[in-house]
Length: 196
Length: 338
Image (cartoon, rainbow over all chains, first blue to last red; front, side):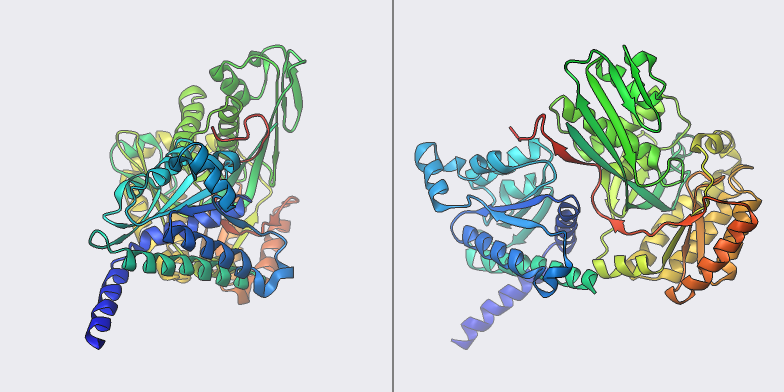
């Protein structure tokens, strides 16, 4: 049993070490510029990735200003898409699953916003469609992908691919969570720093 | 109505190598950052008024853009084929011609706004190129390309100006701790003297071939500055700024003058590690890197030197480095993405 666990830990370590640090830095800068211009961050994914998106939004919105809430008169907001399950099922049922992100995005997205798309394969049709819409309108896009990165990694301005063999959702989704926590921690530390 | 905001910039090293007379022979490079001082531009359709209006330090209304005095608004409107029913107003955190690239910030804001008015969104590179085209090709200004790119892009960047006129953009990725450390060691003073860059650049441009080796050194110093920036080595950066300024002073007779030399020497004597004059020269702003402990003494010394030179508009400009480029802040004409 220990051997099995050790092997998994080694795989995680190796995959994390290979992360594109420069691209993660670009993602932090992208979010920084959204903050400066009072934009919003829209984040989405399918299945486990949607859970990651929801988890990140709740963490990010709650914690980054929480230490010095009253000192930050300027804030910003992250929003998971779709914002409700009802909206998700309405788009999926009435029009098609490929519309579940791009549909809400068309309603909300404005210049100055940014988009974070999460897809392990990078090839989910609804993800690709949403990124294409953002790209066409020169909205900054951050892609969190896995395996070989797929179309998402090709299209996104910021290309954070967790490179693994195909099908290793366990590694990719786990490390996506680590990257998302890194983003939250960075801005928590940054806002603590400027409040001092 | 559309409201656009374009940041000003501080150029650290490589200024002047963005002129075609140089970069056609050797790659030009500039490292700069945008700051929290902005040009704001408002575009307001006036469907019931068959005129064009430009509001800046003065307000002018004309039956055709051709009659406007403001050359950038006039040329841009004619280039876009907009002849009437529009009002354009500009506002800024600082006066024009301070050496912080504000005239190109005005251009990026104007063009981003006019594209938005037509329902088009354009990317950063495309916007920078459009501003270069307006200023260099259409208005024939003897200026380089660094300011248009800095304002359109935002953040700390290295711009490389290639012989084929293309520009490569490489962000310098520093975290908030290094950015904040640099801010705490930075002092920026406005001399109170404004001068259009073109008055200095015309002479500088005509003498590029005489100074080609110096320009190469300045272009090459960008990678050294980047290393110091990434390492958070403020003294190292200051020393490169100082060396660059000493070289730049030789480029044209009016890059520096006794007033600027007095102010710069006063800053160094009060403990600054190094600095430079921002922009083409002849006036504008002076940037220093110095330990926060000497900032008090420097402020006193600089004020005294300014008084000696009768600089009544001399003042310190507090500055924060920023990441965002030229942005639409408000657009209720075409607000939604389609």
